[in-house]
Structures are given as structure tokens and as C-alpha cells.
Amino acid sequence: MFNDDKEFTLKKLQEALDNDFVDLEVMYLVDKINEFKDYYTTSSCIGRCGIIEFPKDKNPKINSRWLGKWHHYANYDEIDEALLKKSENFEKISFVLNSPILHVASRNADTSKKLLELAYHNGLKASSIKSISSKRYIVEIMTTAKMDAPIAYDGKMVVNREYLDILLDEGNLKLKHARKSLKRFYEKLNELQD
Image 1: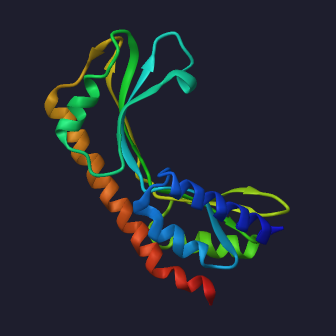
Image 2: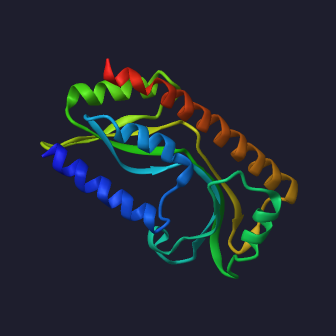
């Protein structure tokens, strides 16, 4: 069952790659994990910063929208361009940083524990086992890097340009540190074979 799921999932990954739906910067890690017989990735993201708008009087989960999101290290001009897209009537706009994240299917409890410990001991301290079923365990690998800072309320900006620049600088710095943790984890992955 695990092997069949892995084969199916890797075919879906190839389709996503063929259609440019994959974060190419994280593929070095995805490819390495997928080489192991007891693991395969189900989703991944190298991490990102962005500006998100939440509308008034609408379900934010369905109706929020990204004004800008960047998997690269964004610059001040990109923040300005994103804010030009804001609507006239919004409830809130936030600057966000999302940690790099990988969801990895694991064959059993022992392989999940081994992967989780390797992640945790290499700086990916927000990692956890997300689900357990008869066919696989899902390990979520991520750092503690996160930001969610409101920058506008009720149709008006509530921070100045200098503070926006500080948020972006901090976001890029946290993203850089998070990606270093991913690299450390990558360098230790061969320990999964021991």
C-alpha cells in the first residue's frame, strides 16, 4: 500500500513540475527525501513573505487575497507594488512570513520518529507528526519562523514606510535563517539509512 501511494504521489509531483506548480528552490530537498524507500513528500514550500488583505463582512478563509507573495527575498518596491492592489474597503491587511514546510509520508511509527528527531535536532523545531493511518504517517517538517503583523485596518494604513521596511527586512532575515535549517537537515538526511 505504501509503495503504491508513493508511486502515485511521485507521478503527481512530476505533473506539477511539468506545469510549473512547484517551488523549484525546495526541489533539492524533495528529491533527496524521495530517494529513500521509507519516505516520500506530499507537499512542500521553501517559505515566503507576503501581504494579505482580509475583506469586510466576508469569510476571511474564502475571501482573503494575496496582494503580493514572494518565495524569493522580496524588496521594498515589491511591497509598494503589492499595496497598490489593495481595495478601498477592507477590514485588515497583514504582512506575513510563512516558514518553509514539507509534508513527508513515512512508512511506519519508527521511520516517522527517526525523521522527526532528525528534523528537530537540526533546527526544524516546529516539526510534528500530523496524521496517522493504516497506510502511512505524515510528518510535517517546519521551523518556528513566522510573522503575522497587521499593517492596515478599516481601509487605512496604520504603519509608516519605515516600519514596512523593518518588517520586510525581518521577514527576509527569518526566511534566510529558516532556509539554513533546511540545508542542515538536508546534509544530515543520509542518517535515515543507518
